[in-house]
Image (cartoon, rainbow, N blue to C red; front, side, top):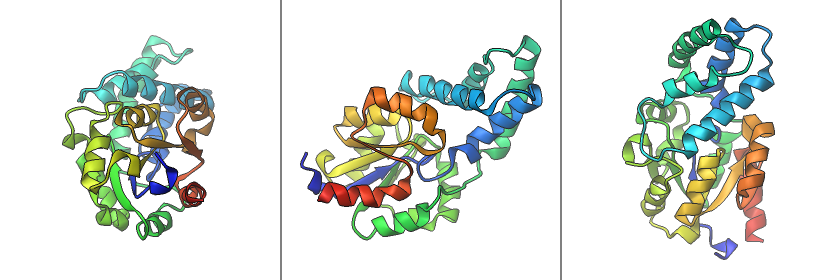
Length: 238
């Protein structure tokens, strides 16, 4: 791929456009703090990221039990006894259901997307379900202007399978060498590589733990937040 041919941008949702902490992270942190008040945030975030990484890079078929599995696996944090784990599973499930529709745009996201929309075709490829994205359309109006929106329900396979990204490329009416995929999880980078689309890794809210996986997976580009993408694109063009 010659880097100046980028015409389309496909973006993940959680952790890229919207805060993953607001929708998922805080619910688990709150639940674990209720169960074990002295637990450190770093331990919780590391467990959350590592669990998501394992679940998102192993199965490629949609799993309706993804969230319960994730809560159960996070409960295996060292230092929790059996009763604390059971209490966390219950509280974590309750808190997730309360927070799952909370949409908090990442810093500078709305201005960034409006800026990018003037020069690039934009698409969304996410493992979030359509209900969440419909809610996001109300709070982030620029999403309505995207050329394509691919959610969990639109695919047979989820990332790291390349199906969603390839559907997104087709929806933009471009070729794979004319697109970039922007994501924040290992599954995003793996799916991009399988789709033969260059990737941009977002460090985001879990920078310390994300950096380690990105060193191994080596996305084509790495930036702190989506708001840094326009500057990266200018460098790619030059």
